[in-house]
Each structure stands twice: as C-alpha cells, then as structure tokens.
Length: 124
Image (cartoon, rainbow, N blue to C red):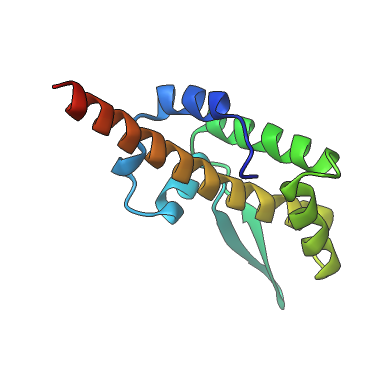
C-alpha cells in the first residue's frame, strides 16, 4: 500500500480539497464512505460500509482495493489474506482494506500538502 501511485492521490485531492480540513483519519474515512457502520440484527452485530460520503472517492478506494487484492505481491493482498485468516468474510476483509487504504491516502495527501506548503514558503 505504501507504493500506491501518487497520481491517484493527486486526482483525489483535486476534488476533496485540503486533507488537513479533516481532524483525524476517521473523519476522512467517513467523508470517503469507507468508515464502517455498525448494524445489529437479532443477536449478531456486524459492520458494513457507509452508503453516504463522496461516491467518487469511494469508487477510487474500491478500485485500489480490488487491484491490491488481485496482485499477490502487494501489501494490500497480504493484509486481505491476513484478515481472511482471522475468520473475516471476503466482504469484511475488503471493507477493512478500504478503511486502511483511506488512512494511507489521507497520509499521502497530508504529506503532499506539507511539501507544497514548504515549497511555496521557500519560493516567497
């Protein structure tokens, strides 16, 4: 996941705006629709992904997750397999991966924002 292309993050940041406007990674995941929502049915507690949030950003996260799952040498694939080994269903494991990817995308966007800010300060 750490080798994800920056072009995807740049594209996301162009319509998301500043990543620093989100106080923490949970707020960004909620905005992206990658935060789990607890649902209860009878005696069983489960989580599902939120149907709200930025659908374009959620679509990008879904695409990245599917690509990572299909690439056996990727860190995302290893994480997905680890979640399956923990007893999660494939849907649950993908939901966990999407949340982790949302955290990674936010970190990359924050780093890019700081880099641009320092470049602008150096140029002034």
